[in-house]
Amino acid sequence: MKWPMYPLGQLCDVIIGATPARKEPAYWGGDNVWVTVSELNDNTICDSKEHITDLGIQNSASKLIPKGTLLFSFKLSIGKMAFAGVDLYTNEAIAALPIRRGVPLDNRFLYYALRQFDSSLGAHIAVKGKLLNKRKIKRIPIPLPPLSEQRRIVEILDQADALRKKRAEADAKAARILFALFIKSFGNPLTNPMGWQEVTLGSCCDIVTGNTPSTKKAEYYGKDILWARPADLDNQILVTRTEKMLSATGGKVARIVPQNSVLVVCIGATLGKVALAGTKMAINQQINAALPSDSLLPEFLYVQCALLADRFRAAATKSTLPILNKSRFSNQKVLLPPKEKQEAFVRAARTVITSHDARAASRELLESLFQSLLHRAFTGDLTAQWREAHMKELLEEMEQQAKALEAPSGQSNPTEIKSRRHAGHDMYNKAAIAAYITVKCHEPNRPVGRVKLAKLFYLVQRKAEMELTTNFSKRAAGPLDDELYKFLSLARKKKWLVLGRAQGDLKPVRPGTNAAEAIDRAAKLLGAAKDKVDEMLNQMKDWGWQTLERWATVLDAVQELAASGKPVTVEGVKEVIQSHSEWLPKLDREEFSDTNIEAALRGLRGFGFIADHN
Image (cartoon, rainbow, N blue to C red; front, side):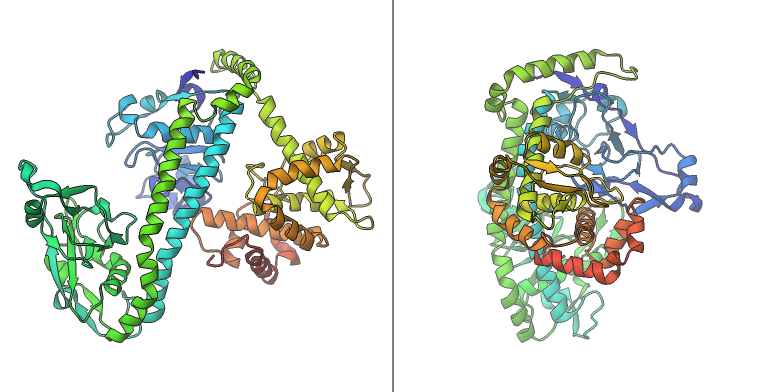
């Protein structure tokens, strides 16, 4: 089936941001989140490095971007994206893409569609590196399968993307282990709080600057020796592969350095990036190599140089490009503790360093698989079998979509398009999970209340890493699935649940006569996570709803902190709660005292909701 294609401007509004005047202090430092391209990292943005005041908004072309909107960079680093986690503003290098009312387009499908087209944007609208503009953005072609098929594609791609992110998180953790171990053993090399001897790099290392052989001489290029350039240092601790190679003759021109040389980028935007030569190789002119003497161990120097990146950047001369030339690089000071101290550190660090290749291979495999899935998704191959099984419903949806998109763009109430099959499918699954929780936690003398059920429903989805509910609302008693009463009503109709009459503040929920049907369905949905969920429910079934609300709220706050790259602390959790007006009153309750929030964090770690290092 060939999907219809529409220009992006027909599906979304395109809102370009603005920067208030920098020379006006009154425009800066307010409460309004203001986002730049550097903060777009396939994440959900709930806060920003800079904020602007209401006065700054009034005196600039800044426009409010509603929560949930996809943000897309079209200048500088073209194609970077993120989602607005709160209402916010952006600078002029970002286009916000709120989907027009009534348009049958899933927000995450749009995200993946733009990722797929990012690699070929040049063929469609501009040459990579040149600026786009609003007119060109509106012309980006977007495929529009039926909404239910969009959601099916998103479901598959989200699962694949989650694996990539977990691999990246594990790699980042490994890197942090090295740095934390160094600082614990020797202190921060920028400040040398332990008073170790300091020497210049040039006094304890041979320094070699690389070169680029003339491209006019074919004999310089071949497959004899690796040739490292700054991009080859990305995501590698030990450089064991490079994009380009040289002949033996070309390697001599470029300058060959031995295995275990410490490679440092000394020119350009990535100045300060560091890696170890995993074998003999040549380097280009943007890299200085430090060849340590016997007094300095290579792995020790590698980690130290990585921690000194800010000092290297500060020492660079500022011209068209920042440059830390050989002389300046040689004069940079490094710590020189006793060799036996270095050896103890290297023994502990070597496992992390030497296992890097295996982690990199795993990361590359996941990336290759994801790109394959992305390609198959937008050629229609990924969902071909599923599409064939639901062809009748899909044809009806496509007909409705076409009618909706034929409506004038200014129409105030265009036809709403809904995926009956997919929406209903998800609702049944939610109803089954709610019934499953009720059965596991029900006791005749202590029925489960709807408020308690709502909290357990949130925690079960997080524990099982399910995506039934894509957005839990931060209402006063949230996090809450706004469709709670809809799927409870469905469970009642299916006789999976009995919704009892209110008993004071308690609205009881009991297992229905057909609950076994829901149990089977839920067990399949939970899959390998079922045992962990059962264990959790067995421990939580006697808890009060207030404790469950605290755990759910703290966990939701932790996820916001993680999305913005902030550390997980009691103060961080309170800041997230304070940032949501409907949640602010929670902090007046004893349940959300510092002691109880800390207890919730410990408990969430113990249950495996939060990684130990957070």
